[in-house]
Amino acid sequence: MMDQALKFLLDTAFGLLTYAFLLRCAMQWLRAPFRNAVGQAVTAFTDWAAKPVRRVLPGWGGIDWSTLFLAWLMQFAWLASLRFFVAGGSFAGTVVATLALLALVELLKAAIWLLIIIVFAQAILSWFMPEGPLSGLLNTLSFRFLRPIRRIIPPLGGTLDVSPLILIVLLQLLLIVPVPWLELAALRAFGP
Image (cartoon, rainbow, N blue to C red; front, side, top):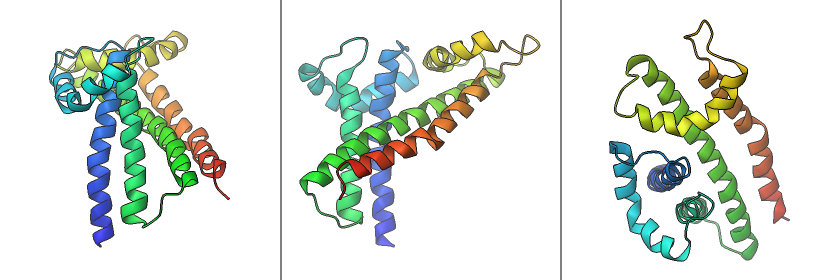
């Protein structure tokens, strides 16, 4: 019972940090506005680590490498803490390398889930509050991914846009097929 409670606390703490750093990186990459409640909360929640790391690892090519590195580091620490505190494992050199690769795969999985949540929220809010306070942020974060689908399948009847549904199905397929294969490859890379 204590193992479950400890796992829950670790999942909550590291999950919040990982997703906050990942969202900050995505917002900067997609040039989303930070002058809203979500942008200000993400900035306040991540500035303590992002600002010092940015001095060493600056942004380049439109990507904020410092927050992406911090998201990976939180994911690595999350996996390491689960192995050490919950499973009672040790840390040999191959274990660290395996956890580093698994952290990359888990970060990819987290990015896919973040995009699913953003697209779903954007679609729901577009029905009820198309000009709501978060509509600009959600549209900016999802538009680049929805645009190619909208070119192929325009809104049905001029009003029903099925591109969010198609994108969510495609993202779910990524979670079902290639991501587990990558997880298995990461485990086998340094395994016996």
